[in-house]
Length: 137
Image (cartoon, rainbow, N blue to C red; front, side):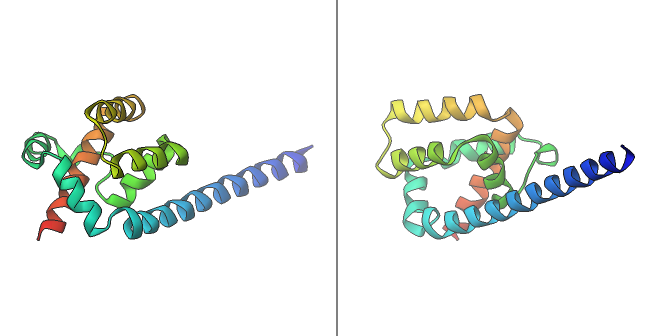
């Protein structure tokens, strides 16, 4: 019985380790794809048109950045991938790429507010502003 329990614990540890490695691998692949396809110069310029950068900068300036759950775009993508399915992200990208209506933007924001904590939303805003500032230099 003792060997059986040890075997189960070892298998569980291997399974958990495999899960973490697979999640990290998939997250890295998604980041690479996002950088290559979604974060093109054209997409960044469209995002600048949609985003009110001054408003975003004001919101970000009020955030205590030391308490945010993540600080890099890679970690932001990992967090979003955990909270949303691939099809939901593809649908959102399609809407934004085609020029989302104000109602669609509102629906996307409500979905984000439902799935992400206030700290995660604040961290996404900080990362987005950093990326927009990098692209404008």
